[in-house]
Image 1 (cartoon, helix red, strand yellow):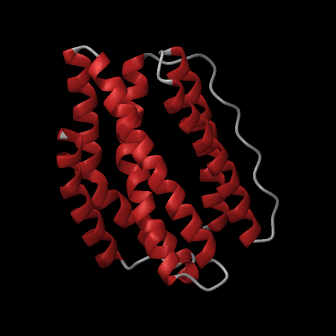
Image 2 (cartoon, rainbow, N blue to C red):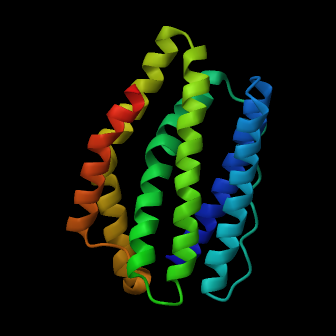
Length: 195
C-alpha cells in the first residue's frame, strides 16, 4: 500500500507540473501557476516521505505526456481529479493521521495539510478557467464533476477496503466509515461548485 501511495504521489507531481505549464500557456495569473508548481514540489516530497516509511528510495517521476491540452480538457481533469478526488484524499489523510501507527501518523498529517491546499488550488483553477469556456464546454465539465461526485462513495469505499486489508496499520477507516465520510463529502460539494 505505501509503495503504491508513493508511486501515486510521483504521478501527481507530474500532473501538477503539467497543469502549471498549461495554466501558463492559457494565460492564467502568475500566482495560480506558482501554486501549481508548488503543488508539484509537495507531491515529490510526499513520494519521498512515503518511500521512506518502507525504507526505499523515492520512486522515479514518470515521463510527462507531451503537448498541451485544450482549456476544456484541463478544466475537465481539474474538476474530477482536483475538485473531487484530491479534495477527498485530504479528508482521508486527516483520518489516517489520527489513526495510523505512531511512525506513520506525522507523514499522513503533513500530507493531509498539503492535499487540502491542493484541493483549494483546484477550486481556484475552476473559478478562473471555467468561466472562460463556452457554455457547452462548461456543461461538459460540470457533468464530469457531477459524475465523479456521484460515484465517489462507491469508488473510494471499494478502494479503501482493499487498501485497509493490505495494510491494517495504515489508519484507513472501515468501509462503513469511509462510505459515510464520502457520502457526506459528496453531498457538500455541489454547493461549493455552485458558489
